[in-house]
Length: 115
Image (cartoon, rainbow, N blue to C red; front, top):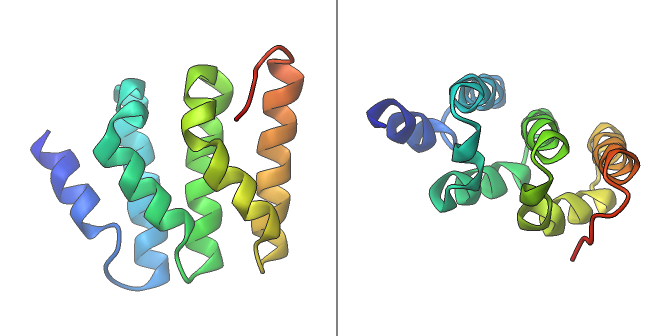
């Protein structure tokens, strides 16, 4: 829990490369406890990084979110608005990542009702 708090605090600091690595570290922590993606504090931190000024950070964050919305579809509605907003991102790689996640979500869970 203390490690998670520290990790969430540093997500918005440092260079884009550092923030991308911090997101990947968060992914490792969440791998150990996937329920953390539903935690409101984690969700807020992730949403802020999806809006990061650096496209590499936005893409790394989408990758993290995508991994869990596909395996835990109940998280899809929580993260859908920010994923959908990235369809209009200035970065082609971020738009492609968002499209891939949403496509995979719909293909793997055709009965999901996204809001």
